[in-house]
Image (cartoon, rainbow, N blue to C red; front, side, top):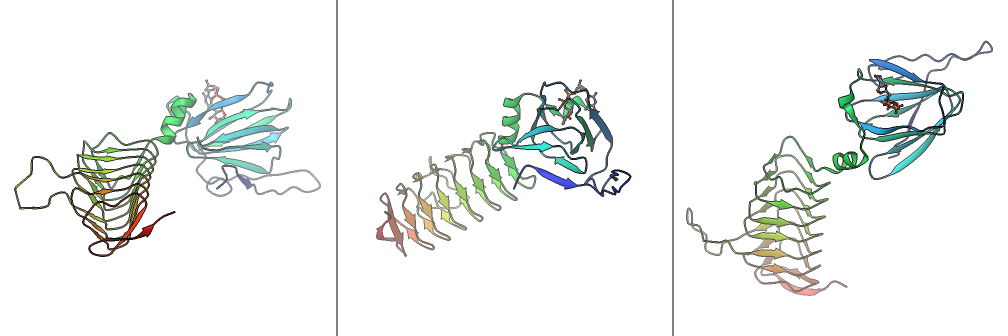
Length: 284
Ligand code: T46
């Protein structure tokens, strides 16, 4: 989706001249609490900040200027030179204004009263905020070791010592215990419990309701000194409902078929299916 959101303002111009009518919550998509205008502009650029909560519509009443909008991943440019058009700026967007014409008059309608606390004026700080992990409010996440851009969805429980890398997707209804290492770009679909002793390396995909285990002889209230270690190596994928018995290594880029019961190590790039899982071939 483009960062540049232009709205056409209701315009009633006729042979007598132009007339634009602006109304809160109608032509403008929020309650306008403040307006300000920038005029007698110089060639110096302005802006260079983001807002945490503010929604704004910028309208160039006279002349022109160029906005750069940046969400931390992509940057887009737009020239404002039309008083019947408004640029909506909302969400965490770094904005810069350049190339003001001498006669530029820029009107900005804002959803909140002025507060300096709402500004992020340092670009690195902005990038940190944009990239911070997204933790859904209905999850229970105790770990502080969660990488940038990782998303944790509803009803996920993450224990305090778990380590999770960057850009992972931890879907709803999952649990991740303490002695767990998860690399970058890992996807864990819903209904997966990642117990103590399990490592998922970078780019691993764990399908829905995959079952991991960590004890060959489980007895209620009896705990081994250490749980058996399972490692899913880089780029491996495990299909829905597969069961991985304890202490197993699944090799790089291997593919485990849906419903397979994996009872021994899986070599690199092997495709395994069935119960007990056997090698059906190798990925190219
Ligand atoms: C934005 C872009 C498009 C106030 O006291 N009240 C106000 O309502 C405003 C807008 C500014 N100020 C003060 C804060 C600064 O001490 O005016 C001074 C200049 O503001 P700033 O340097 O932020 O101006 P610009 O042109 O760089 O940015 C402005 C808006 O501040 C900002 O919200 O999105 O226009």
